Length: 146
Image 1 (cartoon, helix red, strand yellow):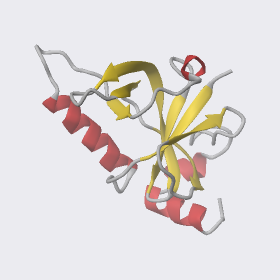
Image 2 (image 1 turned 30 degrees about the vertical axis):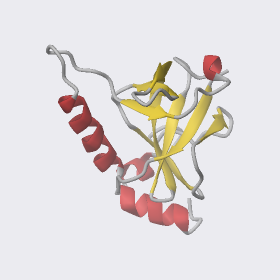
Image 3 (image 1 turned 180 degrees about the vertical axis):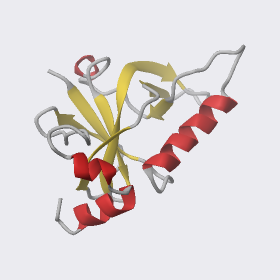
């Protein structure tokens, strides 16, 4: 069974902003004509990494709302320039909007089981939500109406 991660996305104001930031990072990281996948570096390798890599996704919280996910392709241990061990999360390029859910802030990441993960927008009768602007979806979720 797939296991997912939840992570705060600090800085971006929307899914489009997160996508633009990841695209800009990849463009700066171009080496020898290669297009590297988006990555996120965190301090520790999840203990349950075998249940996540290639099976799970990272669910991004943007401005207090869990609103999109990206498939996790790999989790790689690495050592930073400062000698501190870290984890590189290699992500799929596609951001998939999900049914929004209000989330409190926290540090680091949290596990999310497949049963507790929100549905992708456009699946299971949420067609009207998929057509709705992201800011409106987030506001309705904050009001407890979604």
